[in-house]
Amino acid sequence: MRILVIEDEPRILDFVSRGLEAEGFAVLGARDGQEGLRAAEAVQCDLVILDLLLPRLDGLSVLRALEAKRPELPVVIVSARADLPTKLNGFGLGACDYLTKPFSFDELLARIRVHLRRPEEPGNGHVLRAGALALDLARRQAHLGDRMVDLSDREFKLLHSLLECAGEVVSRERLLSEVWGYHFDPRSNVVDVCIRRLRKKLGPGSPIETVRHAGYRLVEA
Ligand code: CA
Image (cartoon, rainbow, N blue to C red):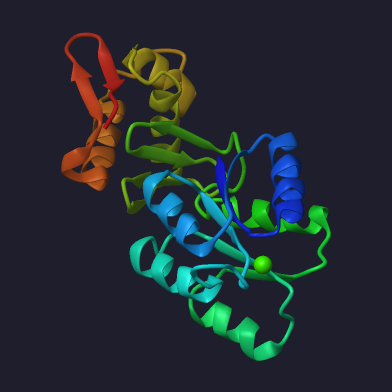
């Protein structure tokens, strides 16, 4: 995760940069509004910390330009200006948060972490992925690209089994055992029927392949 800090006071820029680096973030500093805007356009970053009183281009103008170009980029304003109209103006222009100086680094860090959390990921380890397919284990939902797919209990378990072995062939016997709890061949086509339903729900981009005489394989969608 890379954070761009646009701040003209060297002491604060240095303090924030060191603190964030110690927490494992990559930090890019900019000392005026124009430099900050250029950096935001040139370098991939995940969040911006923005001062308002800046030389060459003021913070609110930077924010306006960022909103037009990168509306999904979270911007946290950190400013000495504590008046309500300025705060509301900042939020109106698209800032996701506003801290007044002097601020506590721990509070800044806590807020940054909230804004960097992706809404579809309740926590690391709760989402299994293969290419464009993601399976949310807590919500029991699949996402294929931007599309959300609701699954029945059986379909969820089936997709889970395939995803855990993404790229490998999973036999019908193994699926019968893991998903249906059968330890014998019931001589039925329950697996194939459930796979068909799952493919239909996932649509034309379904990443489930049939491997003849062997089973099924989940490929990267
Ligand atoms: Ca300043």
